[in-house]
Image 1 (cartoon, rainbow, N blue to C red):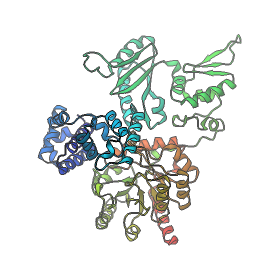
Image 2 (spheres, helix red, strand yellow; image 1 turned 180 degrees about the vertical axis):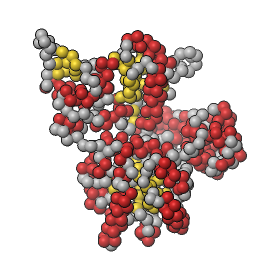
Image 3 (tube, one colour; image 1 turned 45 degrees about the vertical axis):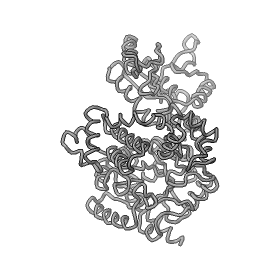
Image 4 (spheres, helix red, strand yellow; image 1 turned 60 degrees about the vertical axis):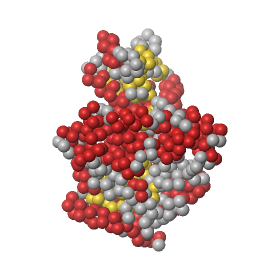
Length: 593
């Protein structure tokens, strides 16, 4: 088992233990170790072989035994025992916004509720409101959460879907049957959640097709209870659809001459492709997934064209090449025709990492480890922002802890110059819009990220006022994940985005795009509006483990989708430039006082 899978198993044990009403200390121990395991650079199998499992923070003899068993067998006796004792449907109930283990346990033990259907029925009958800790409003919220879960059922987060599609892509490439294999569809465009994935497998000859189909079928999930059978949705001459770990993957079998047309066709949104076909028709052409047809041959007949690349296809229609992320029908066709598509930000443009957590609060890496990883990846700086005191659940730092951290930052800056650590905080935005920590403490920091972590449910007007008050605080540098949404888990809270954007522009506060794949908050449409108002966007992984470094690439994808260039993105500034940016923000604070 990989580290990620073992971390998931440990986290599941923690959930089951809480549902079973076990000691809270034991539950938290498994939770903490699961987070630590996620952030490990070394494989757990290697640590076990070297007898070093106890070196992982929080791992005692008992948890070390569970990890060793998972490494050796891929299973855990303790997890299997808990699975038998706890109804599986409770895990679905736990995914509902506002229903934690304590409430799920009360529903189970008091009303015998172990499924979403039973919970919905109990809410509609009024039985849930009679329980301690619930009420009529609780029933309303639970019903809304059940509806949200049902509408999002079958969807996958972007990173997971891309990983599964990537597994099939890699296996086809390894076969040598295809000179080109590409992920297309909504994944290539950067949609934040997807229900299926498209892959183009470009074959060199017709003889390659039968073994190619056989290979793809062999990559499908095994059918439960049917040895030797695979979960194949459809198998035809031009498409093979299989289920891979639950995700539907449609593999299109494309002849080499049609590769460019197919890649364009199966990447663009319906709106983009409709607009492109309309333009082609006006020019006397017809575009489909196989060819461009039109013009006149020697005898006056229509001729077929097979562009060598997508660039050639767009050029034939009088357009600049449209990057995949922009193909949503949001004005990109007109911009390509008028040669005003922007220079989009690239991963190589990022100079530093903003919004990082360490073991000082709820991160898995020490500050020293974080610095080392940043330097290995060629970054010039990191902006450290552990949690503030109100986030007690995340080990928020007291003012005294923050002062000690400042001393550590100073020492590391001297040791690793010219690399730079900027010292800040992720300050909770309280219900009244004020920031955590006294003003005197915030004054000493290089920057302040403000975020809402509590009282997520507020009337829209109140939630908007809360954010606007925080933005008006002269200490605030960056507003983080403003909606608080968790994709496929909970909707973000409502706020007036127009008012919030206006406040950000007025006060010169940057807007974070939290690029953790469970958030992507705010989405690309709001980022595009922000940039049009001159608001700087900070693309932040909200890093808690080493996975966060990879999430920066996802943030870059979403920034590109929002038409952002390097000039729009805060962490594309050099070390010297962002230092000056922070200093000007602090000077503005003094002037406003």
